[in-house]
Amino acid sequence: MKMQFKTIEYNKQNNEIIILDQTKLPEEEKYMKLKTVEDMYNAIKNMHLRGAPLIGVAAAYGVVLAACSDSSADVIKAADYIKSARPTAVNLGWAIQRMKDKIGDEKNLFEILLKEARSIENEDKESCRKIGEFGTDLIKDNSKIMVHCNAGALATSGIGTALGVLYTAKSRGKKFEVYSCETRPLLQGARLTSWELTANDIETYTICDNMAATYMPDMNLVLVGADRIASNGDTANKIGTKGLAIIAQHYNVPFYVAAPISTFDLNIKSGNDIPIEIRCEDEIRKFNTKGIVAEKAKICNPAFDVTPASLITNIITEKGIIKPPFEHKIEKATKNVQ
Image (cartoon, rainbow, N blue to C red; front, side):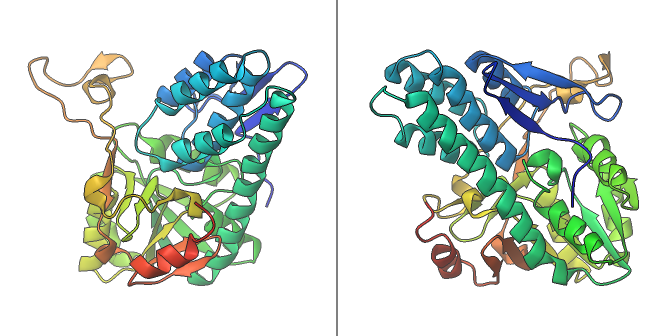
């Protein structure tokens, strides 16, 4: 299925990266050019682009920007700087390490790193395609499906992970409705998922996060993405995912996670060890620059929560569907990958 937009593109002639500025959606489809390592760091940090797989692809091309003129030592520094932009999504560090592993003799360094970045992008696209293929059998005709945050084409360089399953199902003629949680505090479900799905002619209802329990009894499944999955299957995803999983279990609704193998972190035994990004207060304190919280009130703004593996029905990957118990199956699926 061909998307109606493109999230990222590297222009070799100008040594620049063109991205869809996701902070402008859904009001404006605007593209921005990234010409420096600082541009890429800020784009990731300020979420002009987001989504774990896309962050990995973008970070790889960010290293290419540095390789055009800098020495090997400076390229390594640039890579580490980009890696520090956000802590939770493991794809960022994974992609940076792949790029660093290719840094050696400065001869042909730029071409070597560009080839690796393109490989990471192509692998992401292929992973999305395969996740869609494996997951589509979970979608039955006339299903009602709840999703959270945005795990679609806007979060990858391909058709997406969780939403990639929906696009594949649609391409096979299946009919279904999607209920997209708004996803506080950045409203990525309301702003991004509703825009992306409707742009691709999928019937979509946007609901407030606190409506999830009301609509859950009518759902056939919940489908979400992931930013980091521990070796035991505990999964970090956008804040609110854990609550959905708890509600889904109460109503006996299957809860599926869709993610590429690059999102698994075998160095982390459980979700307790996953670093959780704390974002700025203004994302909650203000709405369109207008204050909506009392000035003396304190703010809590974790960007992610961790869903225990015990609440997850299956994990859909490009290597197939992983069923519980997860631990040894995750190790087998990720073998020779990390």
